Length: 327
Image 1 (tube, one colour):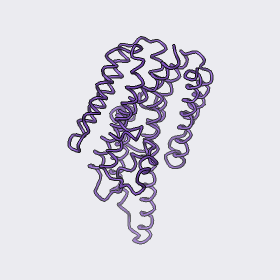
Image 2: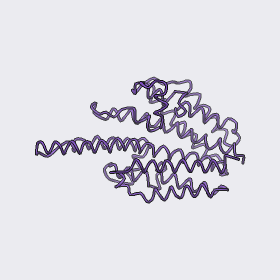
Image 3: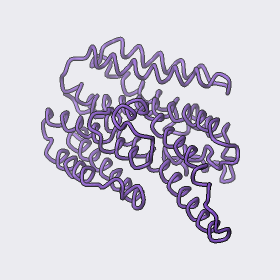
């Protein structure tokens, strides 16, 4: 198999997954802001940090207003932003255009059609939900076509490598930014409660009032990854930060959990030649993930841990690229 073909297929699935995940984020954030009280400071800036595009967002205008209209436009149809939905779909289409014979014809037609739809339907606020729904369903159809009609050759292994590496990366990004906001807010709430109790010497009710809103935000983390229903089936307790983190980092049965993605990457790499360096990088990453004590991370050190995981994912990509794309 040509390294150029392997690289194109790998990046094609990464870009499709990126477009789907971005659409999910926008949808969930819209619904979250409707559920939270108006006094909350939680807005649209976290989405920019999740996709790691803060420098690009402010590059043209350092004083650019971080409001719903600007952020949504940047994430959906800004062609100067390589991680926007339209840019991701365009890149996926271009990567597959010259290697169409490696995938079922229906998959190419679906990618081409989804890109044309996104290009021709810049959504208004009223039509945003339907637009994002079409993008998510279209990306899922592409995955279904590849899974249901593609021979299990090396080409399919590269499809899965790109798919699960991008998915693991997005899951860690969502956890890093969302949980940082939630945990810092929880610490501020505890500090304000302590000061209030010292001043009034009466039991504080703030925690009881805040818990529902904190639970709503942790639910938004799960819903960003379509994980809420599976979380309730597996955990069977009230949504809480430590349980959500453990589920999305270490659960080996949920397809968007980091541990599940890493296990799938291991399966794919073992079927490919010249996999020693990539498997070594993957093994170190899995060991770090399995050794983590999530309840302690939920209180302190989570950001540094997520940084280490993301560095590990980047190193894994570098090993894959060196072994298969540089020839």
